[in-house]
Image (cartoon, rainbow, N blue to C red):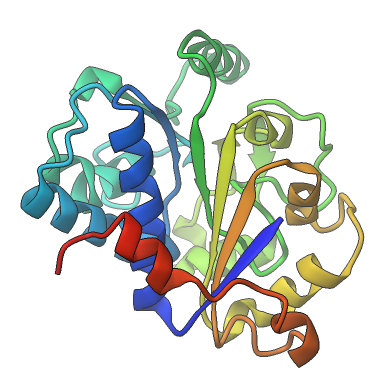
Length: 264
């Protein structure tokens, strides 16, 4: 597991976008696993900028999103489908038929989960999976205690997760209690994984991910078992990590972006 230390949210976003853009250029028909939330908004802005300036094409790209709330139709302003359209898809030249997001209003949720797994498999598996992390260590909506063997499934959201998402709703009663999420085993089958972590609110969980063993009580620790994971973390997120440990992290953002540069 490689940890890249960057200064702030903007540098994190630029680095992540450079990695994703490089993946698309190297393999134009990549299957990208995408995430939602405030952590990835800057990355999508950088990718949109790159698309406009450097004409990086998404015409052959397929995408699969990590999750979606249950009980919210896709055009609802707080659905993850709406988030992706507003923050990324409507600004690039992606084929709308190549976009895959779980259906939060499916008549049969178990069948929807099985269909989603089949879509990922038939597309050859995720080439690069983008992740954020919850304050409780969840990846996707895989809450603490989720089996590492879980495939795409329905999950009941922890209160801490619902409180974290309250800022997008008028009241806690409006925040959904359940979601469909890619399972941990599904995520772990991705060829490459990119985990973005920014801000003081994520410092405690990042320190645990780095220093503690692999445990289902902190789902993100499973990433230590993956052969190709890069964590991009800013100074605030790394603030609780021991200084000597941090000296072993990569600080090669400038070198990387010189090679795969998103133009200014």
